[in-house]
Length: 89
Image (cartoon, rainbow, N blue to C red; front, side):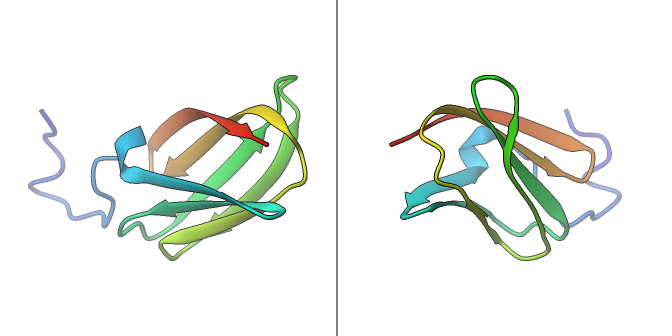
């Protein structure tokens, strides 16, 4: 149960991996998150090295990368964090 949400409007809905829309494009990874105000996305390779990182205030962030293989995407919005495995080809 979320006790804070009914009383304080943060502009960030409950952040889950289902809220993220991830679309690989040529040379980039597009990450969309509903109505977030301030959020960031970081892409790590399988060795834990940061491949791309961006902060945004809209609903979409582009992470430019030419890295291939399995990656971990970490999205932070407010005090919430979601990690998701992403395969880039």
